Image (spheres, rainbow, N blue to C red):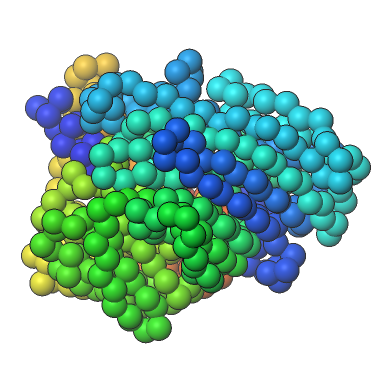
Amino acid sequence: MKKIYIMLLFLTILILPVLLISCGDKDEKNLTSYKMQLEFNEEENILYGEEEVIFFNNYDNAFKNLYFHLYPNAFREDAKNLVVSTTKVEDAYPNGYSYGHIDIKEVSADNSLEWQIEGEDQNILNVSLPYEVYPEEKITIKIEFEVLLAGINHRLGYGENTINFGNFYPVLAVYNEGVGFMLDPYHSNGDPFYSECANYQVSVTYSSKYQIAHSGKLISYSEANGQTTINVEENKIRDFAFVLSEKFQKSTAVLEDITINFFGYNEDEDIEERLSTCLDAVGTFNDLIGNYPYDQLNIVKSNFVHGGMEYPQLVLISDRVEGEDENYVIVHEIAHQWWYGVVGNDEYNHGWIDEGLAEYSTLLFFEQNSQYGLDYTEMINANTESYKLFERVYKNVTGSVDGRMDRPLDQFNTEPEYVQCVYNKSVIMYDSLRQMIGQRKFMRAIKDLYKNYSYQNISPQTLIASFIDSTGYNLEGFFNSWLRGEVVIQ
């Protein structure tokens, strides 16, 4: 997620996880699959869903229960964890508070299964399986559900211009060997998500007055009785999302066999300019990091309280950002297609991994593309001065500052603290590393990380080990001193 508005807010106010299972070294047929049939009722703002999850046990353990995240329940009226910080309430709810939730109607295999809703925010669906599923075995689970949308400018909800469907369906919780299922709740800091790569087949039915932007590739399209139905498929993606709008104006270009679509609004006059930025970003990251592996990418202007949000083959760009800021957000969110989308991680407990790599890749983009008028050195200096200001103010106000980068989202006391430690400090860390080991070895390490861990989830230890292998330097002490907050930034 882009940090720009949090940064402005901050300046205004303040004037051992293990290596995770790989889906990269598994054949696509042995990945978990999601098959969904979705229908949106615009009058009631309800999404009706039927989901078939074919769970393939790629782990070393046998399972008698499976767990699914129910992220829409974070939008309930009595939710314990806020979906936005108190400073963002007016922007998120321009028409006053509104609430939503997900209802699970039925869970079955061959017959109905026992299930219950758990978690501190009713955020987990616990399904009892009819038999134990051993390694290399699979089971098919069917879930019927309904999602009531809140009127909120967020990942999931409806606003004045768009209806956003992000993190809307029951999604399998990741199992960490030696730890268990990762069942962390929603949090307003960062992106509280964690998922494995899977194969998707999705049918969406909606009013024909809308246009749609979505993850995956379009297989078929039909209209009848004022309703449109699309069928979408994609293999080896981490999530699925879509956006509806009556106001979309789409511009399309092809780069290296990748179809890139920018969805702006009808009245927009800068759509071609924004599409050009998208093309520059994809081309640059293909060169710097490695090839984008899918054949389509949709960049979508939307009602969103933060700067932007990433999903596989789909990124949201807030319609609240403009000009140069919009270019920056576009580049950052497209960078997430590489860091989060292809190389994934536990975003709740180690958010610095994907956010730090995406943010530093954004600076590398502007270093390579001087026509945008942003100077790399000046941006590094701005990050450094911003972080130093953060430390000074926090020490003056609280007497101490927690500079740890590697901690769960709920251990950051404020959004500014999260932004400074996850975004800014990561940028400073990677710049310091690059200066220490040199441009050639640094960029080789970035390429190797992407190449060797595509479609996998990596831990901090995995990232560090990858950099060590690529550079030939023992960098464990370097990384750990930054992650633990021991480095003094001058």
